[in-house]
Image (cartoon, rainbow, N blue to C red; front, side, top):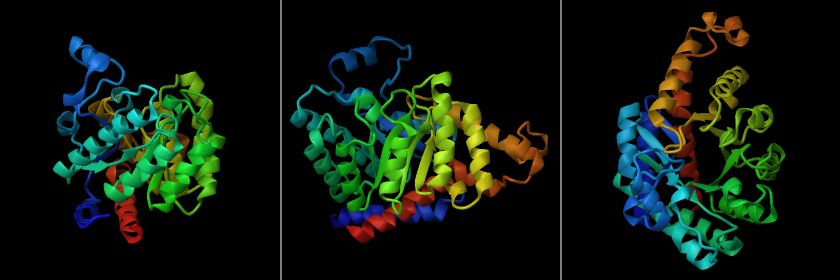
Length: 337
């Protein structure tokens, strides 16, 4: 890792540590270099004002949405719907690398607004390509979190190739992350549990906590399993995006009641542009407001313990938890660089 990247990481650490008590941070957003869009993606982007699933937004678009939603920072990674894959591992590697580099450039431009995170694909790029990509993202660009999406790209979350990439990310000092939802059979709870048990002393991020693109009925079993799974494995961090509000409420209450370290393991998120940041964070704020008035809440756990949530614990879920995860992870990354 070169000195400039290390200096940027140090600056981000200092900012996160100094402001963790006040920052509202969206832990799951996707940004795209919209100036590079072409083909069908560009035609869809320009043809209609109507929303379509995965519509790409730039880093600057995200900043405007953050302003509207009163969100201070966002963790950003590439938008898989806007990154072309053609079935050629070498070309797909370059396409994904370009998308990752855009995330890095955006985070450098807006150091106090974005936390950059990377993306690898052991199916499209091949295992060797994914291993090489992980090294570039962590060692060259200084990314802390590196994600895979077994659901979209069609491979089991605990396959041998994934395990090799997880091992490499951990060896490099990074944090592996996964799309983890009920929208496909590729990300079951027992698969995520095998990864968590493989490196019990390393953090693991599971984005969506069992939700993703699944319908309410399909997701029910994985929601329940995920809640219990995280309470068995304190090294799992869940980003609460693209999921049913009532399950998010139940998870927050359960993890707050479980105390340390579990109350540090959930982070609010929107999945923008797949979810609207203003809608999600407006909902989070009102949900937490109801928690602080616990004696009148319909959940019996809050009625029995109306002081379960405090203004400080609410702030942790809205931003403090992800701020501390990133700051502590970056410090570890610098030590292993």
